[in-house]
Image 1 (spheres, rainbow, N blue to C red):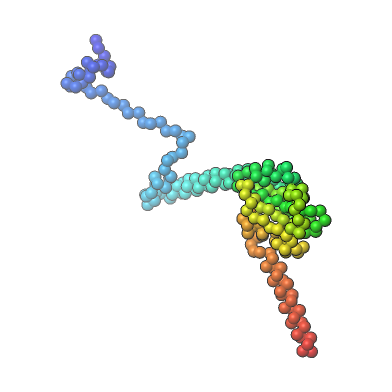
Image 2 (cartoon, rainbow, N blue to C red):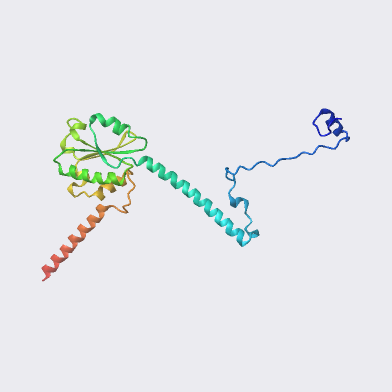
Length: 235
């Protein structure tokens, strides 16, 4: 005897004419993949807050807060990894003309390169070398280099020292040439950092131009001296 539950053309014909009952179709619900997050945020699913109890509202807030914190953690981790990839310098490297292409042109994508051309015996060159040594440690994402001027560029004139060449992606973006450009021996580390900050080379936490503060102190001192002088004349 033929099984009435089998899927055969004969049984299909009998079902069509009502001789056999229609076969029940069992629909299997799709399996949920617990590893895959929901496609819709919780607040899309539970929109009617008025129908929630206090416990449900508290649970919803906890879930939403946890979801937001998880997104923030992922974003912060990505930022730290990107910064870690860039923070690979931290010191000032001495180079020669033979190193130029490798150290400058092939420094890497979106890497700022600061090259100081200097000479021994020039006080301002020594001062800038001291400043960039500290700044290199403070901003390890920037590549700081130094080279004796005539070693890097033959016959480079001493009158142009110190010189800072600033590169990005192999292109010369800024060139700061000569002592007057740096304000002479009064140049401080903060002033040089601010100069880099203004040129978008570093992200400084300095809130204002330190040169302005020095100028304000000097102006205040001059005004005070003038007032003292006027008082003496009146006496």
